[in-house]
Every structure is written in structure tokens, then in C-alpha cells.
Length: 355
Ligand SMILES: Nc1ncnc2c1ncn2[C@@H]1O[C@H](COP(=O)(O)OP(=O)(O)OP(=O)(O)O)[C@@H](O)[C@H]1O
Ligand SMILES: CCCC(=O)O
Image (cartoon, rainbow, N blue to C red; front, side, top):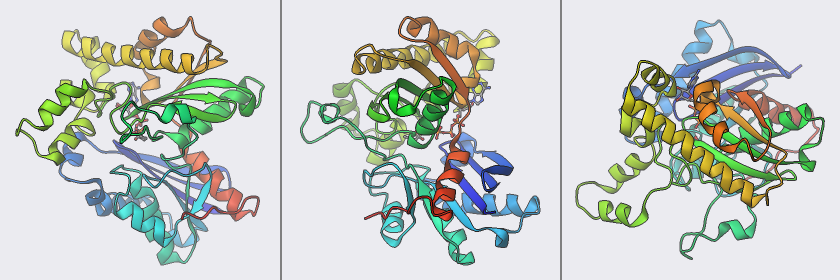
């Protein structure tokens, strides 16, 4: 029996869980408000704050970390790599610290896992980081050769939910064409063709729908004008696109739940903006249906906002002609992390090496 600590830093929360093999014996989500997070200029600056929150919580709940056999973190913005479980190594630590592909909360997953594991002399792993890259070559062409499209999305949850949906459909993931829609602090819409994510909006760098904290795609020349207007520094512009974009920019909160309540209380602006987010998600689903040449076995919704039936209703109204809809609100990332670590601990799979 293996005891595994899983750590999943998201843009608006840190989720942790302890598993005995595949059985969760403790799970908790620490939510981070916009005010709390915006104190830190860079995500790497949240390292101590999130690590201490995890250790404090485990102590409060009476868990002794000395019982652990491994720590598994959600992987971050590394170089593009194939799907799988990776042992955290020095090269990875360096790339995570240097934000080699940019800033993302999950950069902290590998770093915090490594630190806790190091003190206990046990292994630290990451599984299916956000840079899992299975794009078809045609999807990499952006229109500007210097700026190829890059695969950055909720790979861990999209893969886990796709497999779950396949099981519920009584088929193998590798035999299906699915559109997986992750609705979290960031939003990604992936075209899964026979087990590979052949196209997906880059959910971090300003592609696809806007989300609670991100702008998604923007009018490009207007953006260039704003960058050169002298009003903002580079760092401020980056923050306006990732962190302070989307619902935060229009409505001052990263909580779709709060926005839902504003709409229910009759706030017209909140309704227009929230419905526009659903409209943009629906457009992205349409685009991925075209990627799959109209052959779509199911459209599958997941992530925190998938709990909101009003929001899903707006999307489904526009996309129900494409394929049947399945809903898996929340995420399966914690069990996916534990299973990834467990496969290696049990010797069913060798840990991959990050180079
Ligand atoms: N019942 C609900 N109704 C509406 N929105 C909800 C509900 N429950 C959670 N949410 C929203 O889901 C969003 C967070 O989703 P999630 O927890 O999947 O994101 P995250 O893990 O922080 O970030 P990411 O998924 O991008 O890594 C928040 O905006 C939150 O308000
Ligand atoms: C970009 C992948 C993960 C996220 O949006 O938080």
C-alpha cells in the first residue's frame, strides 16, 4: 500500500489530496481570492505562501508527512513533452524556476512536490503537465512564422475526463473523437482524435474564449496599439491578459459563482459578460467540430464552472446540433496525479526523464 500526497496549484486555488493507493483519504481545496493573489507580482513569488498553506493544512488535519511514499505535483510550463509521468529532476526544477515557457500556477506543483519529497528522501513526480503536445502539424501554423501555435492546456484533466467519458460510452478513448471543454480559471477546448489532442486553444497565451481571469483571443492590432501606448509596462500588459483579464476585468471577480449570483439578482452587465463567455466557448466548440470534420462522438464539459447549469445551458443551446453532451463538473486531476505516481511506484511504468 502506497501513501501519496498530490498537489495541484490552479490559477484560483490549491487542491491537495492524500491517497492510499487509488483511494483518497483526504482532499481539500484552498481557494485564493483575487486580492490575495494579486499581492504577488509573479507566480513564482507565491511559492512560500502556497507551500506553507499546504503544510499548515496537513498539520491541522493531523497528517504526518513522514508516512508518505511519494509526492506528485501538477506539472507546469516546461518545454513541450509527450504525455506521461516524469520524475522531478534538476533540469525540470531549473526550467520551472526560470519559467522557461512562461508563468503558470502549476509551475509551483513540481517545485513544492520536490521540496517536500526532498526533505523526506522520497520521489517527486509530475504527470501530464500543461505542455503535453500532440498537435497536428497543420494546427501549429499561426499566420506569422515567428509565432507558431503552442499546445498549453489542461492536459491532465482533459485526458482523465476523456477516459472517463469513453468508459461511460462503453468504448476505448483511442477509438473516439471527443471535444473536451475545461471550464476553470482558464478555459481550454480540445479536439481529441482517437486518443490524441490534435488541436486545442492555447488556454494561457491569449487564444480561444475569455475566462474568469484571462482575455483569450483579442483584436491583434488594437492590442499592439495598447502595448505601445506608454500607459502600461510589459508586465502590466501580461497581467491584463492573464490574471486580470476576462471576468476579473469586466466584473472585478474571478469567481464565476459570484457572477452567477449577480446575474440571478438582475445585474444586466454581469449577464451580458457571462453570456458572452458562454458564447465564445460555443464558438470554440464549433471550431473544434470542424477540426474533427464534423465527426464528434460527444462534447464533454468539465472544470469548476461546469457546475453552473445556467452557463452550460447557454453553451449547449448553441452546440447541441453537433453531438450529444456529457457533463463531469469539477475535475479528476487529483486521482489522475495519484494514478500516474502509482503506476511508477508499482513498476507498471517507468518514470519518464525530462531533458
Ligand atoms: N457551482 C458553481 N457555479 C459557478 N461557478 C463555479 C461553481 N463552482 C466553482 N465555480 C467556478 O469555477 C472556477 C474555478 O474552476 P476550477 O476550480 O476548475 O479552476 P482552477 O483549478 O482554479 O483553475 P484552472 O482550472 O484554470 O487550472 C471559479 O471561477 C469558480 O467560481
Ligand atoms: C493553460 C492550462 C491551465 C490553466 O489554464 O490554468
